[in-house]
Amino acid sequence: MSTLVGDFQAFLDSSQVTTNETVLELHSKDESYHTPVNPEIVVFPRNADEISKIMQVAKKHDRPVYPFGLGSSLEGLVIPTSDGICIDFSEMNAILDVREDDMLVTVQPGVTRTQLNKELKKYGLFFSVDPGADATIGGMAATNASGTSSVRYGIMRDKVRDLEVVLADGSIIHTGNRAAKSSSGYHLNGLFVGSEGTLGCFSEITLEVNGIPEQIVAGRAEFSTIDDAVNAVVSILHAGIPIARCELVDEPSIEKVNQFSDTNYALTPTLFLELHGNEAGLEQDLTFTKEIVRDFGCEEIEFELDTAARNKLWEARHTLAYAFTHSTPGKKMMVTDVCVPISSLASAIKHARQLVDDSGFEGGIAGHVGDGNYHILLMINPEDPEDIRKAQALNEEIVEFALEAGGTCTGEHGVGIGKQKYQKKEHGEAFFVMEKIKQALDPDSRLNPMKLIQVKE
Image (cartoon, rainbow, N blue to C red; front, top):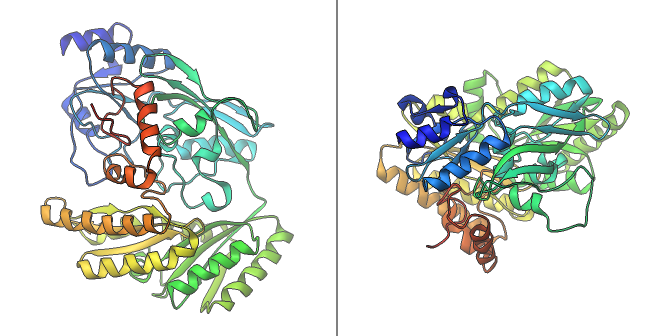
């Protein structure tokens, strides 16, 4: 260990290298239920050259490398699987370049979503991907994050224009350019976004951003059944209404929202909606939206123009996880994450609700219904092996349903440890192509080993 520390201190400041037990423990876990594991050492690089040298030291000492953002991931993505080197990107948190006319921004991986949008606001711009947590841009790119606004603006893979990546051998590459489109070469942006630190470490990220809308309107629509709510969403999308956010929250979740956020919403399946545009256009869109949802038995719909009222509405939705956590002390949340074709969404959610009710667990369902992605918020005792076994079995049934419907085992949280066992079934023969890519770029399985694609020795 002293030799390893000495090799790092040859090019890093003493403050950038630590074996402090408290720091190691902080880097042993994420927000998931998976068992924490301490790394041997944590290093804090400040640029690509330092990451490259870290990779060379890791090779010299035959140590695995685990990239770490803020630890907000939900499938064990950052948890070490054995002793190794944790690379924490918190000191790489600079916004390097804002190209206002090109609507592009280049950042280091440790920049957070809130930090970025605070800076972009000066230019009348915003970054649209909103996973709920104030995650780092590097972590969001690593997991191909999405969230509430993806129905309108797309997911991380749609927003990344270029990446500077440090590979396992220490070489530094760029995966794209600043052009809006290209037919040149393989699509490396798409390969590295969502690779969960298994193919390289991001040192710079260039993103597409959007202009802040002239007007934003948010609202709630209450329905008697989940079928009616989902079918209303499908009709809104078919009508071409520029819906920016479209979230479904089921009855048990609304009850938790009321308790935690001091609201008084009806205990019924509810859509949380948001539309972006200009004043004249939005007036027509709102009228059309109200007509559509009433055709599907909407019992109550109201929209908010006031910023404070809109923020309160979305705060109630975004704090749903905390509402469940605070109402069940001593338990930890397990969050499922599947995505299905929208035509299968209502049946998928009803299937999931029945599984939760039959399990005896307390849990709610919330979904990004505009793109078919939904989550179960399941409260379990992490110290009880039987609780974990039952929860994993429930999750497996939900995943199997999604795969049979032509969906995916993870819409946005990533694979990590938790969803790895479903990869072969979901991807078929393509899985073996992924193995070959991993072997080609990381032949020693040094980068975040035992995650995403587990290559056989």
